[in-house]
Image 1 (cartoon, rainbow, N blue to C red):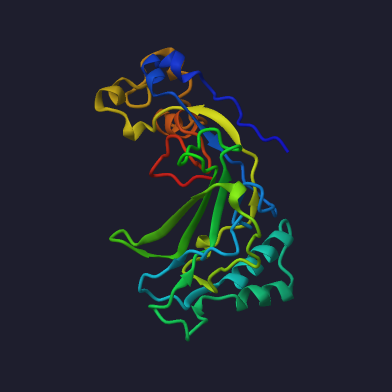
Image 2 (tube, one colour):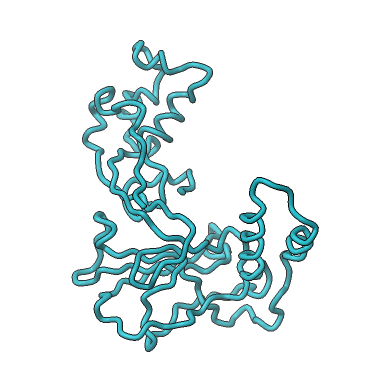
Length: 263
């Protein structure tokens, strides 16, 4: 299935020519729920991982047995998907009520190694802007599903590059942790529909002088921009940031808006 990004509402370079120097390409992955093959780019696996190579683990010391069971997270999502557009049945409500956060694996010690779940794998053939080490064409992404790492208390991410042609037998089943700190830390398996697009720098990362000249960084004086500042149109600063500068996406490259989650 081919998915494409709708045309931008305005040619931003025609209105603000200085932005042309910040033009670059990125790739929107367009993830959609589904199961891919190890030989395909995907979110949440399965990965092209060799049977004779250790799976990445989190060795940091932190609580690992308390949170949401991955099986409960997937059950909740399945129930919600099946009930879309209608009320939950009594049985569905019972299942949802039972899928709660708790200490589900009390025997899992803080210092025990924890398998990292597969987050994504990207083949260079699918993502034109993805450039890895010479001779390696496959990027595999993992994270620890507990936001407890570093001073900012966030996820710990691990990256692995490899040459896909070197992989023989593929590991199956593939390891995963029993528990995640938050449901949002459990990625849903998705197939990808990569699309290369053009974008510009996120407004907050432009130089001060460029921001002042930007139509979204000052009050719009031209009628061309004033016509767009109606009650049914977002403010220019927000519009520039969300629809004209960076693209909403899962971004393997390009200008990432550090304040906005991507889809």
